[in-house]
Amino acid sequence: MRHLLLAPFMTWAGRLKYPTLFKLVAGLFVFTLLVPDGLPFVDEILLGLATLLLAKWKTRNQQPASAAGTPDKRAPIEGHATRR
Image (tube, rainbow, N blue to C red):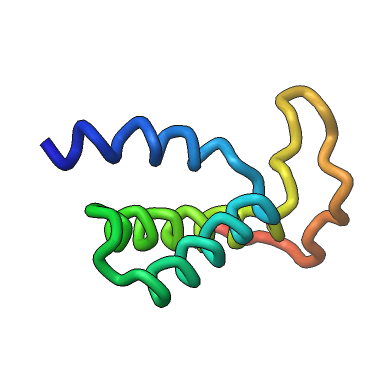
């Protein structure tokens, strides 16, 4: 039952970008500090959103992969290869 209630919310939150997701996590964190047991599942939502926040934060700093068929702009690796 708990999964059925949280799954749509986590799907929606998974589509949010980094700044909005950070504000949502910070707001829920402050809310749970003020009212610890006001709403059921707030702790689960907060942990799930924190996980999404960390996942988005990591992927935000990575460069997008080059598309198929387009040349890579990086310099080639210098050296030579030998077969043994």
